[in-house]
Length: 443
Image 1: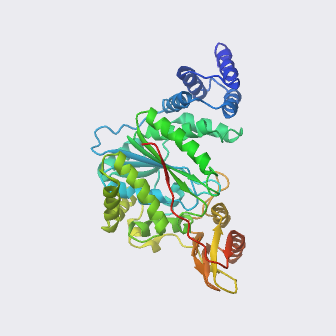
Image 2 (image 1 turned 30 degrees about the vertical axis):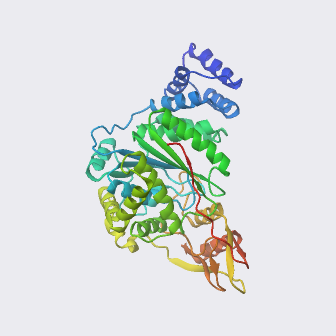
């Protein structure tokens, strides 16, 4: 770092510390200098902390996002012959909507490249789920990715290192300096990757509740608004869907188990709540991308693609294209299986109804079985996990199954059962099933 740049960086930190606004040029200078290692991490950490305390204006947030995008390559989908779409979820327990949505949207005529991450903590990652499919590779070069999308309309891959390197460096610094929980920084991180991905239409699934990063609907609403404003400010058709995460989405929590549930859903089965959220997100994508003229048309189109088998066939194509065994779509028994599978049952002396089921706790129980990782280098067991046989509002008879635990050993099964015993709250009186409720922001 040159001596000339030092006063400039300190001045920018001081201005933000006092609540001042930085220009797009100054934010670009910070991003470019940090990636080039001319600005040391201790100065960038000081600026990030100032942002956490003072916030950023809408113009600053958009400018920071653009500067992060400019730090790497961008995907160019010109001439692809299909409207380009993308989707992001802020994470939740049992969320496997991408595995259902991506092939359905490709079958509907969209070009859909979904770049995803790995799980850390109580939530599972889409890449971990995909790698439960024998042979599946989540690594594609940019040229390979484009060729695959031209051929079959979709790809499910890991984040390309050529895209938005500034985000990776900034997030690593935020992670160790207590500066993760800032709405402008979260929004910029998410949207920089979406903008670099090049899609013209973006739909964001912003979750809230005990199993989500945003615990309250108000926090989710604030983040969704920031995300949509960035997308619209960058000229992308953008909409956010707020969805609850009080209990896991669907019934399966664990990598191979979630792949099987996604396949079941593509084939017309699967849990209703997973299909409803997939249908909601897909409807907004079709509408914004100009592939449907009304909500009814969009919902009918997606349902027909599911019921005809077109979505499942496209998923098989995607698996084959990325080196996996496409037979899993017809025979999910090919997926890894845990050796110790037993039901966890109710020990109540009469009928009970599930009154509450802590989503985060279920995720942590699956994590303890080996379905997730506490650190980035932890191995993941694709076979283990939990299948919920009873969700909120369900009646459970004496001795009836509350969950099916897939474990490596009896001892690990017992540990998971002990955790679930604390997580299921049962009522002697009937409990209403939670109403499906989504809030739409933008678009």
